[in-house]
Image (cartoon, rainbow over all chains, first blue to last red; front, side, top):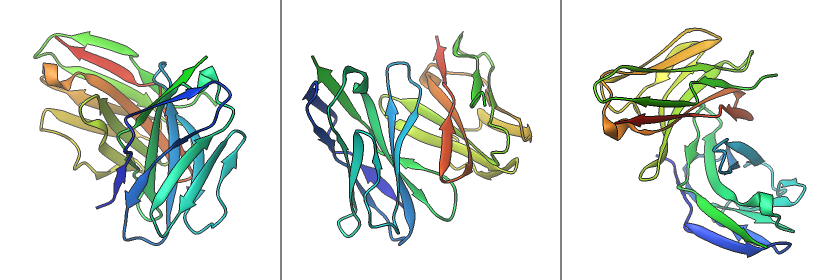
Length: 114
Length: 112
């Protein structure tokens, strides 16, 4: 069974600085999707970024980028120029190409200091 | 596009009562998921439907939980009878495929 591990329960970053959130996963599949979701205090789950495993190029969305290391089964999220609005719980998730359900990590709380 | 719509947003009920949570997926999305979020267990998939048919209900904790999807635009998650340990945030999500997985705002259930 696939598993997703987020080893950092909490992280802090100074406003305008850069922070990296870690995620590792376990799978025997060669093709799959990986996601980062943001959950602010409003509790809405918001898709931040998506990576397709067959693509070697790391996905980027504005200030958010990933470091996808397929051999190491690692999928970290880098947030550049951190803003107060980035404070939230961040979830890493794995999704198989076949089948349709996501497996989530336990989440990392990100605090942004002004 | 109104997104995935869940109701109610908050529900407080007494132990032993029946609780029904509702979800309207995004039109055209053929998969629907029910997740439960707690501090202790994080996000757990309870059940998911594909084209209105339940595909995997292995996450449903007990017979007290049941879910239905009578048509492509509506699903319910029912707990009968409810217990305090069922208190959690319940999310519904829909997807046309694995590229688009959209969550509703969730229902916070408190069973006293």
